[in-house]
Image (cartoon, rainbow, N blue to C red; front, side):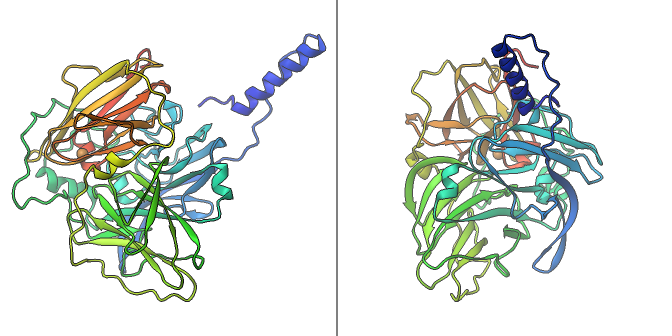
Length: 482
Ligand SMILES: [Cu+2]
């Protein structure tokens, strides 16, 4: 990594300016030694007790202990000065989901940088942006399934001034079965297409199949042993003490590997103010869908003397998880982790309503790249079929990615290094939310637009971990970079 830090560059520039003002010839000073202390993160193997039973997990740990619940909290515009150490016996690498760093620091093995070897460290140094509710997670193999992820909250100055309590809720899906065995069940034992540290580069594009769903087929690929909110189940939930009648800003992250949820606030009305960290025109409601990898910021007011369960309902199934917001003295009632009714199927109804607070300046697209999201459920093979086009852009262009889901399953599609704007659903144009992960139900078409202002090689993939590993992964390339 470049040792010449941003501060050293500024120091150097100051020296030149001072010299010029004095009219004297002056040698550039050596950059001052960089005394800023990085935040040290360590990936470790660990044990998590889920309803009293030990399960193998991986964790991100700092000097302050496990980060899996608290995460990192940063200020927009400050230095992202982080040293990551692999404290495990397998390679790893962490992606800063939601941030837009220089591409070499994006944490995707074989795209931005090689995976980190056991015992080795790597330093990151870039400017923290944009603000919002983000997260960080392993991008190596199936490690994300082992909970190698943590919140990454970036506050704006006005967030600090707001008279409200921030509460982070991180959702996971958890199995006592090793992820490789879960994958083997899905593929019928077929070997992984790329394996270990790498990503499955799309193999021969899977033949687009007609919708594979048939009667009785579940919307979920995997039945998990537990659904977690802040690493706990509803048998022993995370109870957060909140102020009586206080205002709360929920920062909800769906860090599950393969599970979509609907947030359910019960009788309390919430105000959705941001998706994937990007502000939207507020939308009032009691239930809000959150696909894999997406984030929701929801503001709510605690009623007098009663606790507020914030539940996450598993899509198309009766399981649920959640946390409890409880003012002092309020009774906390037990909530069954299995509901009587199934959680709703996710749709694009809310997405159609969302409008960014700050959208892109109106401009015709310079480039539109069309693609089909394909799948073969029987072979468990997934793909992004560009139909001969290159996933390549030129710096400065307004780019549109027009996706058509012909696969029969749903896909949360994530572009690294950029936040895009949703501009089209099923042929209807509008200026929707800005975000970094958009959900595509089966048989839908969604177009997103972005400005190509962050040159590099960028992962573009389905965030369903098992779909990604089985081929639904591509690399967006800026011309002139390889
Ligand atoms: Cu997918």
